[in-house]
Image (tube, one colour):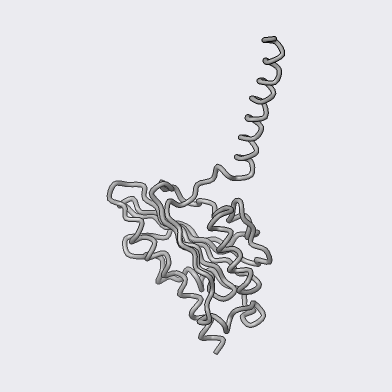
Length: 197
């Protein structure tokens, strides 16, 4: 009788190991922010609700200007355009995305964070990505900080999505202040709205 129970228990244990491996392989082991807010697009961005109305690609120097090299006590550590938008994500997909531009910031006090902007086909796709970030997955962490003390905000702005994620890696760090500073990088989208008028 004991021998018959050993085989099923071994099989169950094996399945549990496989399930855990699949969980990690699919990215479910990736960090998420402790606090998250997501906003759908609004009528303020109606003029750029589709990429057809705002066809010029974003440029790194347009989003991450010399003026944003520092944000308060934060200093920009990197800025890049990713070849594939999904390289910036785990557990979610940016359907129809043509660009993902990302920058990371750090400070001597232990504040750290990142900002990503996605160029999507329209406002519906932007809203869908924000909804997916709330439950299905998130952006990949590109700078070290403690995710369990972090805050993030994702905003659909016409056919763009901006994601600001701020964390703490030191005792004096303030993720709320860092998040506000990083969110300011989304002002580049307002310039696009003005250009479309």
